[in-house]
Image (tube, rainbow, N blue to C red):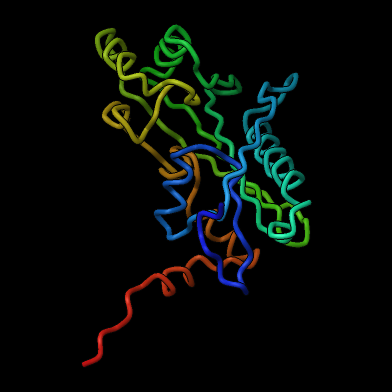
Length: 219
């Protein structure tokens, strides 16, 4: 079932993700995907793969994977498929999407008192099956964390499945001293770059604001 009744002249939008964060960010700029088509791919880094290359490769792979599944359907043959991936790194060291408390603790201990980089890549397959991608790099610095602060954060469970073991939009926001770049990219989807890419592929984001605006009242 479609999540949005698309204008007949506007391409449908498919989000290749099940992430509530990415869906919420899209809704923030007035976009509700017509469909969610999560693309589950092997996210293990290749040998000697740099963090920025990993993020780009995964975003592109997810977009293509989702597009190949829906292209056989008449209603979605000409849809735009949007995918994204976020990688957190300290230098060339890629931090995991933490699945255990011990993993999350190691990440927080590593991030404590130092800067790290968050790479979020977006990829779009357009209506002519062309693949576009863009990488956004953001620099984030944590305060020096005490054992008590790390233990308290671990109890929140916000780290579960998060790159680097934290969610900036949650309690971890109180631990961050500096952010240089895109806040929304750290959350999971760089809104400026996403809007620009979708607009360039035939889905002008600002037009959706006009369509959803309440009708002007007659005087």
